[in-house]
Image (tube, rainbow, N blue to C red; front, top):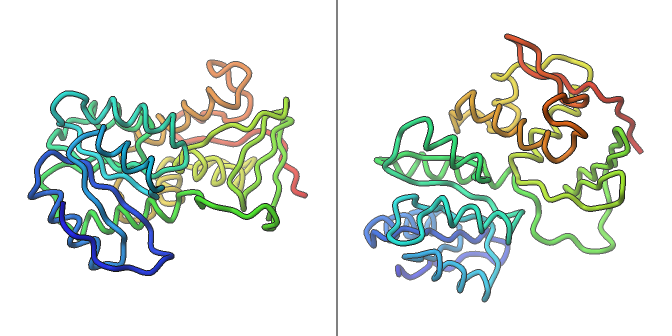
Amino acid sequence: MAESIKAPESAKAIIIVDDEPQVRGMLESYLGREGFVTSGAASGEVMRGMLARAPADLVILDVMLPGEDGFEIARSLRRSHPNIGIIMLTSKGEEIDRVVGLELGADDYIPKPFSVREVLARVKSVLRRAPRQAVSATATAGLTVRFNGWVLHTERRRLTSPEGEEISLTPGEFALLHALIEHAGRLVSRDRLIDLTHGYTSEPLDRAIDVQVARLRHKIEVNPRSPEIIKTVRGGGYMFAAAVSAA
């Protein structure tokens, strides 16, 4: 493991999970110089040990790992740490592999070979969308948005169901829901949603937006196959059809 470069206490913590020491060392060193607190792990087991000792804001996760692969790790990581950012890193460049990673809860996907500058841009993009890891009990709740009995606290980035249950959202799901609510009643194209939720550096697939919408529907729709809140507009994009009120 490369030695992490000293960073401010407010610096974001990143774990790089890759079984290639050269890749881990290169990313730890480069991101460390950019002000992040970096550490490396050769497996999901080592990563979990690190997370048990100290929280992290983002995990850069290689798919092609021996034993437990990145897809399995991403699935369990999203369940145990719903607010953490996940970037998949792999030599697999096929669209289906990228879609699988996104369906499992990844926020972005970078195929190998890559440039460290691209990784830095993706890291910054995901962290801009990621929920704050710690919010004091007395912190302002910010804007509270209501729709169909649901309550979205945009400052705390928390979603509460009509039954009062808190629903976990990945950073990407929150960004998408927030973008749709901000444009409630209006058609939003896939390209526009990509700009609103991923920034201009991520270059995500149109299919990734469809995957995020499908995941959101399973969380907020009574019948995801016949959605009443997030409507699909054929050839156009999506529309948030529920009435929205703010308090």
